[in-house]
Length: 405
Image (cartoon, rainbow, N blue to C red):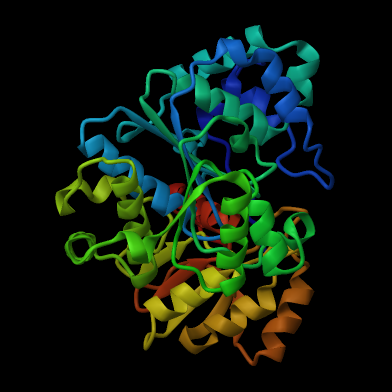
């Protein structure tokens, strides 16, 4: 049995200790406990060094990345200089910071890192988490932008992206995920995600009434104006969304994200048309066709699985899959089972990945056929699904021309 280990690019072996990527590699990506006061405290001490654009904050469980990219792409089409901060990345860190239609280049990232090192005290630089530090790097990269669309990482109220003054909060569909940090039920999760709302809150179409109840209560508490996507859009807007979705061949759930972006544009008084949404506004890794017979998606929770199952209804695919231990993968696989021909487990060397024997037990209980992933058979249809790690592993294998055989 082979296990995927991320290949090192040739240039990665030559990085000096002052390089931004080497610095970030030393920081852990995940923590068992989170200090919610650290980042706001550090940012207050260095705030004077930042030029903050108008912030649109995207929170939610699913669709944050695509909604934000549709919104940022349309603003660019309207002649507005705009940045988009999203996470995590799939192949290169640069994917996280997008400015006017392009991922930021290494030179700009290195400059932001060096500036940040001069701004922060050594103890502060050491204390900041990976996501907190990269959020500050993004804000330095965005200082010439008029607007910045910031996607929350894990939550909302306590997320690093929440410390900046914002003109609009956009809440995509909220569902159960990361319960250990966000809460055990929809009410608690929605309260956490919407806890730092701006004076204007746009709520996408939700799957749980509790989310709308929490949004109404928090908007009233904060004196915010609450908008709902389905109430903001006119018949003309619906036609714009339909035309753009047809042109981009969007599955149903992405059409909902597009409509939420259009509603945000209306609230912000930004002009748009179906031509505002071009191929570059479609974020990679969201039901993306990477080979004629291979789709991949970075979804990693039951809500994402339901969206994929609906989009591929009537088809049968080979599911290239693996899961983190803290994910409800039994429910995810159960939701996807109507479209699964068999499951091929992509072995990944990561301590957060579930033990293979446990995943196999679940597959047996669901009566799903399975085996290890080896390579792509051109006569089969594939769906690569199960978090950024699975997609990253698969894409790295493809990029380096490797198989697991």
